[in-house]
Length: 179
Image (cartoon, rainbow, N blue to C red):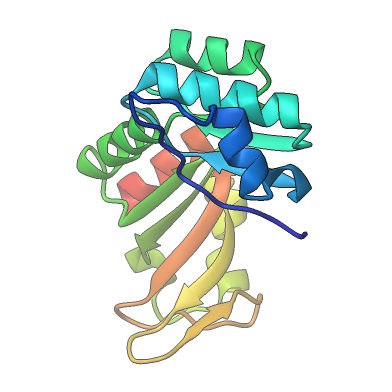
């Protein structure tokens, strides 16, 4: 089977076992599983362990703390995600800046949606030279009343336009400060 997305929880009475219940559901045939149990650490860990023992090749698991994530990794989770922490960081960037949306990657790289700076209005992206001035790459442009389009050097930035820009986190934050 191509994939599997599940939030698995098991009650206090464990008959049949987690592993047997998963086997009965055919989970052993799936290439990947997502365990979205966050608040019940024991259930989360036991589910990842059961999936590992069933031989599921790729396991994604939600963790609520660094120690929880470390345990999940040690029992077989291939990818551990921390959605609450990631969303907290994202919201902090949005609150403390002029960004309309923000995604930061682990390697210090970010993408943000910002209002076009005054210096770009009425000019093409090539003429405004935002990349050479700020180090960010304009990936896309959303003009008022139009669909999102991929950025091209000849794209003219209209008043009210939104830009999707990419660069290092510092470059994106500096650029957002001038918009």
